[in-house]
Image (cartoon, rainbow over all chains, first blue to last red; front, top):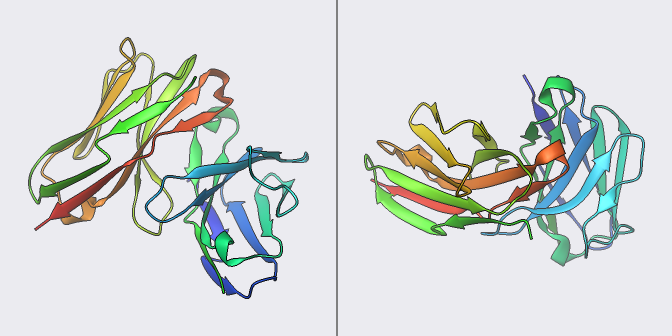
Length: 117
Length: 112
């Protein structure tokens, strides 16, 4: 149980285009999802916290107009990288925090590798 | 300031050997501490979770310890295998689960 999926697992796009990444909790409801970015050989960096039905909370230095987050349901959050540029190339990982007995738990997705040409 | 520090930053050991990874934290109020294993190009996978009252917890060849007084945790890996090569991340959550604090990880390389 408590599986989080991401789609796509990898994507290559041209500079200037927008890319949408989906994060789904498959067998539990997640009122809170987190989006992380990880550059090679570095630790995960929290980008934003997404709460179902409300606006995301962005970490300092993360452009909310560039990284659009939508958490429309208890099982789905999306991250859209708008007007992507090569410096946005990174490994994007989401995690979901459960509810009830799983509120203390954070389950990670497998990640999405974004390459912007 | 709430922080999580891990050491060493990287570690190379021979297959079959044991090793211990360290995690020191200043997160307060404390809720729980979790060790994750992250293979290259994958998302982190939980190994153990420890609450305030727990001193040690095992998961196969992985044994985690927690000293809530000194705010230190360790992850001990016994009889290492090549598949243990990964980054190990210590994550501490704040009471009321408001926030998670990540260590920078320890990169473990197990060589044959």
